[in-house]
Length: 168
Image (cartoon, rainbow, N blue to C red; front, side):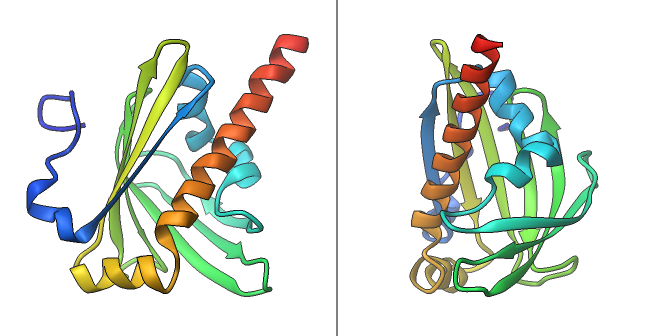
């Protein structure tokens, strides 16, 4: 989703403000992409281990929003808001993620979906407004582990979907 539509985003200028997480998932790219585009899928896998999600509203289109609450395993509720800024099926999605519309601490994420044989390599590059916000996300909210767990939940969900489809 770079200017040429190929390759990874430029990392040099934002290296101290970003988190990059990737994973290979044993499922076709179109299915992995679809898991991000429909709320019936997202609500089944979104978030780190032990979290559940309640959607308040969902509209998957450029400029559309997803308002939701993530429920932590300790009972804490986290108000969340995502607005999609770019959608290129099935190659990538760009979004802005914060607690609510207008959140000055909202961060940007670019997700790329690349074929890897019969599997899909997903990369999530998240850029925070400041190095301090990135460091807080890593240290206080365990953003790297949470992102890895979220992609693990996605992998388990789409792999099970593929398995069920093969049996059906």
